[in-house]
Image (tube, rainbow, N blue to C red; front, side):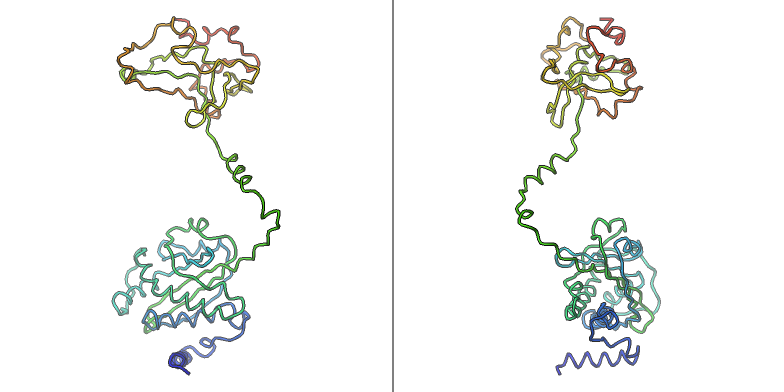
Length: 380
């Protein structure tokens, strides 16, 4: 018998005198009733970690086992508690939660080397506090995992160490995986028993082995999945009737109530543009079922396209509302009169005259009285 075994036996004998045999001895069987659920191993290894790794005397008064789901873990994360992620192998993640009373007592011992008889006023626990308590969390998890690895089916407890702090319970579904969890609630008494608190642990159950892939599934080409993901992405389109160029001086002279002329032919030359002004399709403006709509031009239609300001038919005969000097062209910059998406065009207050537009099937630029619909053009 080596010296470590003798020390463990002496420590266990002291605990038997304090707590009784049933609360100290770890059964050797593998069933839940005999300790295979990890309860007895966790109680014993927690006491060892506190004594050998944290340097203080601690007694586990109670260790309760819980079967939990991810939704149940949110109840444990509270602002006054210290909640940290437990990182395991193969991407498995668990949770550890220190009660404020236990965390403050452990921090006081670690920083001052003593425990006051009176409980200090609690404060918000931080990531710095969690880094100090990792001196207990990490060896406790390591010892517990090693003890469970010796039992059949106990590999779910191996390989864990303390990770980041969780400050909000709403973050749990974004961090932890769905499924079942092995939960433990330990009640610890420190020093002379006047200080202590609760420690909550939750480790995920062993995931079921993934089914073997068939040769056909394993050999499926990845471009199909890539194509499906790309084509399923959302794309914002802008309906553009007209673009014009104004100098900075002309923009500075704009006042509420000023009219910016838009050629009538723009109604039959609407473009659908994607990001970067990439033209997706062309068509003409109208309405369908009471909603503003654009009829996309087909191969048989002659879409005039979104012409420039200087090339739009009939525009040269109209007086410009803004004087422009050619020498100032270098300072000009384009302004896109981009219309919002179709779902936003139903506001009659923004487009009062648009309610008089005919249906797409009835729209005829030559037969429509544009002067009546657009009085601004009738004045020119």
